[in-house]
Length: 165
Image (cartoon, rainbow, N blue to C red; front, side):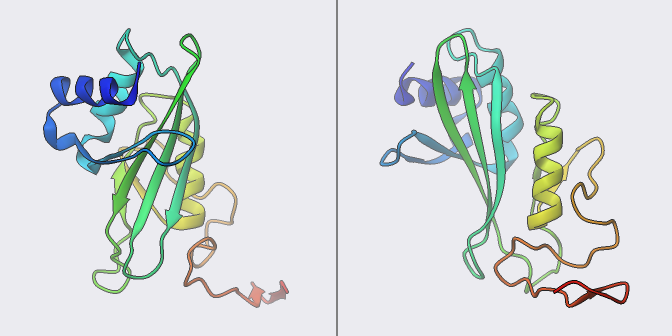
């Protein structure tokens, strides 16, 4: 199934507003999804017999820099059809306004492997995944301050009085 067919399928099943943009110049076709529709889009792509994206191979949180916001990138694969698709969700940069974490809905109910990936994106980039069953740090201690993969992160010099540089 080609990207145009996938786009048409999603717009028919979910609605025209679910897809904000498409990026066709890279190695894998990419659809930019409105964050409110990420769960129904992923559910449709996994369960529809024409697409059957049964494997979430990677989910990454991205900091595009101050004023450019954040994003979540989903790399999907259909093992039976031997195809791949990338989805992106763009998130507003709230670090200088509300102080709240950027957020998107969790897809851990669609693909179980998203549980780990979403916790990692939360831990390192500070993206909150609503409805995640156990969103807590996975690589850093629970009391760690900040998110190390953010562009504005300042390296800590000590942790509980122990030098870490």
